[in-house]
Length: 327
Image (cartoon, rainbow, N blue to C red; front, side, top):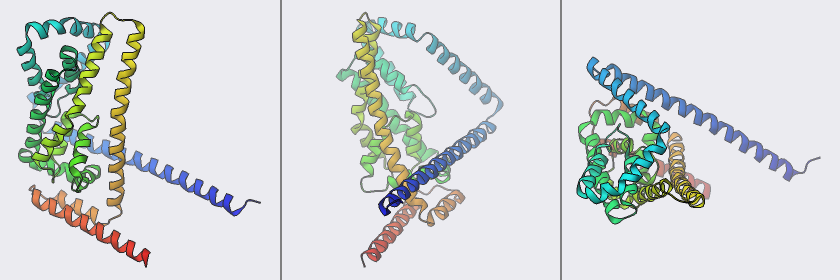
């Protein structure tokens, strides 16, 4: 016959397992809904394009796929080419190479362009972990990110409003960024390994984030850019004549760097999920999202006011519950 403690322990284990299974199913459901929403949005954007724009998109996509395939097949040759000519580019065309890298980093800061990580790593291959290489990444990325943010904040207002009100995860982000410590959370977002250009546009669609805070968050998180320079330097070292032992050390250091960045992303995901659960416990969240979906004009101040009211309601409920438990 089991003791009371054993029965209590078994019941707790069963409850934990059931909670884990329920969370796993909820995660799958959220993933499916996100993919469904993404497919619907992309399909709507595609249908609204003219024939010649569709043709250009197809050609661009085909070129990108071919480039990726060639890069995978000939990655060693490409790496050797960049390594062999990096010193020549730096010595013979110092100013031109610097200008081109800044311009390319600026361009890929706008969604849906990609290549920021690649260009940052190439900067590390050419200039190494130096102040000049770091300044190239800072100037190109911060100016590009800020202008991309302004584009989605003030030009693409209706699209931004639809995005923020149609996705609960993004709505949870908007309430997180209304907290008192939102500035540091925003800086932590910039440290995460998320798609760079897409993050610039997504943050621009979230009310409550000022341009100044966005700029400072990018500036404060700029030491992260040194990691790209570090990886680029190690890749250059691997591409040069070096012993197998040195190559193994370089590869392990790159893997460790990627793992550390991934841990930061996990911390942010945990905080976002926690806030989303808090929002789901409040019945007013559905009404608030529905209200914003029906809005035709983007009103940043009005939306911020609604977030503040929703946050005050949650705080009042939490305080009332705490007082009742105390009594």
